[in-house]
Length: 521
View 1: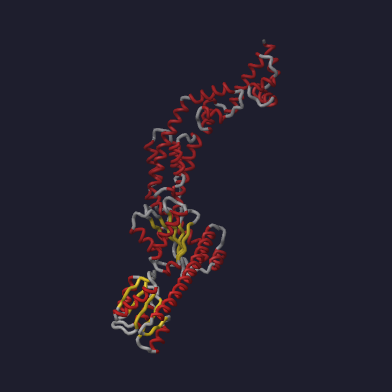
View 2: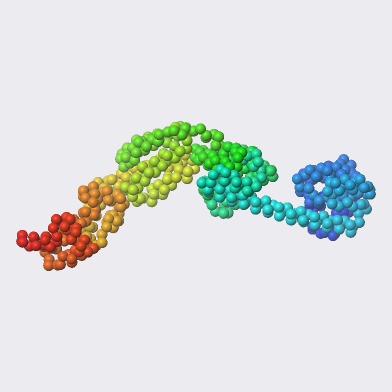
């Protein structure tokens, strides 16, 4: 249903026009009335009007002045003029204002219906052209967004090539420069429905800035699940920050670049926004960090590696308080905040490598709870903020300290090693290896290897050879089995291997050993 406004200072004419229109086009129009041009403008400020039928001569504001004022509206209605005066000057002014229909009073019903049909067709054409244009503009923007995403995925592309690619896109709205913002949600959700909802939210916010801002802004999700916003509107990101701060519950973090003028610097612009986004780890939600506020941080520093190594060495001891104190010193936010983000990234990497990875390489991943926490702590940017990350590091250290202490106690009473050796003695004839034995006693492979060597003073392979050769020596002296049969019964894959290992440990061949033992008997 279209909105139609009838403007005439005579009530009977307004009602008569309404009656004729509703009789011919029932249900097609929602009709409103105004007695003069000023009333009509007030109505058009409150609602969109598709068609306007106006008299020329009216008090307060006449039809011609009203038409002139209507030309300044963002959405102009189709206009039909009614006049009781066959005045050519009125007609000329109406034509100059792009008025499509001019009817003389008294109104002939057939002429009115024909005029409305004509205006309706014009509206349909305008709407169709508008839809086609909007589709074309949307497709252009989508193509530009896809190309920009491609450029960000090509780190080797130089400035000149980037500028050439962007100029080929004929981007509008970036003549005076541009700025990039990266928006990140805590869940990093790439579900298409969720992404679409977030784009709708952003577009709604963008529309508040007006049509020019919409045309000068591109937005799309990048490879890191962040919403990338490229805008040529200087006030947009300030508006975004204002919205985030006003709605304190919004779980969004944003990093913004400085203002750039050359299209070839697009990647440098993106890198600034990316760097600023990293610093949001020091803020709770919602967070908005501009690159200008973090530029100039100290980039010359020495990582506290010796302290981190001390923490690793203390795990499994009763020095929990010292571990906590060292950890607090390493993660002291007053000191961390002075440095470039790479400083805390370096600390995080050192903890992962020297502490957490080392523990699991030596003692295994027996605890599901610890393993889950260990995997999460590996990426500090997966946490809500710095304090959340630090809390989880401290918690993991506490759990690992207890875990390593337990593993050391188990190792110290040698029960597992005794069980392992007994298993080897019972199964020496099988195709035995260290993985099978460590699984049998439920110990991590690497930890078992170290613990076994510490307990026996020998490697697993050498100890197994000694058990097998010991059993072979018994069979050589107590049975008439052939040498190759003895080798097979004691776990050697073939006679050649048996002979080589026997000579390696005993210095003589199996036959020579048998003969020597028989002579001595």
